[in-house]
Length: 545
Image (tube, rainbow, N blue to C red; front, side, top):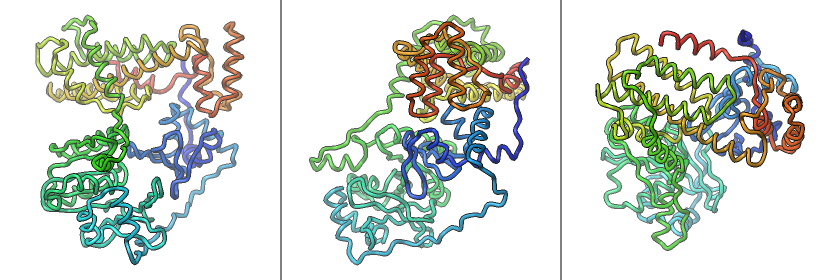
């Protein structure tokens, strides 16, 4: 029988969540770069860190060290706690129960320069912004040149015309960009007209470039620059302007811009804004489009490769045959199939070929149920409408590659189905939950397929085939890399892989980070440990599903 899930005190959790993430990452061999008051993680450039907190600008989510280790390193709660407490012990961390809050400084606009020669020269000659449009923004005091550094200052005003936000941009290529301290994120750089149209941009220069390309009656419309992909300014503008009915997302034509647009679209749909769409530049952004008109070499657009992958996957799924008896499409059969996947992933050797096949069967069961609920006795075929729904619902920004998180999402989806069935909800409601479930399972199918390919590539060079890997009790043990390496090495030697043990040792000792070291060890052994409380939850929830 598995041991009870190890519990931690509130004090221990507080200590773990007060670990300085910058110190922790440096200790793991990670590199960071200064970004204003924060540090930017070079491995994930959209992640900034300040003390014991992190923020992922790409997804607009953040948190503290425990969540950080779970999200980026794939640890469960207990593993994260043990690693953080060990680090805290090594560094002598104690928790101040009465922390002093940092006093927020007053927002002050940078001093204006007596002329705007520098910013006019840059915006007109290097960025090709239309002069009449630039004059309009300058006259409305939305743009000016600061005195000290000659930066462009883009000003955001509140409803009473009081400056609340300022974004500075150097007039040198690849120069400084950042917000003035204590800027209110609700009032990012924007221009309000009279129409129902709102055009949303990542950066002020993107916004000015788009207007320069579409000058006709431009003052009638509304525009906002988010200074990134955060939505606080957009949401506040929508809350305070009921007249804004049609939203156009004009983000960069690259992976981050495409995924950011998806996320904002989902936010708008949740707000019941149905007239929302995406306008993509031909090149990387609208300023590159403007440069192209002036014969300047441009940075080309980059499409998200995940969409090519998902379209190919769906077409392949349509062609493969998994025999499913129509009468066997029940909530119970779906729950049972998910349970098989859970145990395959958490208890058996991780054979991603089997997991991929099991995910495909679960996906087709769920889509068959969805079709059955929506269209009554309609047979599930490669022409069923639910395929189009699956493709339309796919979101690259949710396709993060964390299988633990995907399994948890499917588990939560099926709990929601069970509740709806128990409450005798109508077929439409239950089908909508299954529609969400299908998208989560598609992500599972994609990720297990990627892992399968990755393992094949790795096994051609290093490591062992999945079926040959010995178990190594690493989970729950001291997280020191040398301790884990010793456990891994002993397991390999006992299984008769002395040469592989040496190969593993050489690769781990020359690795660049703790995370990389763990990944290398997992190429040779199956890390095992005590079963998690989630197993108890899933058994309890799935009984009677």
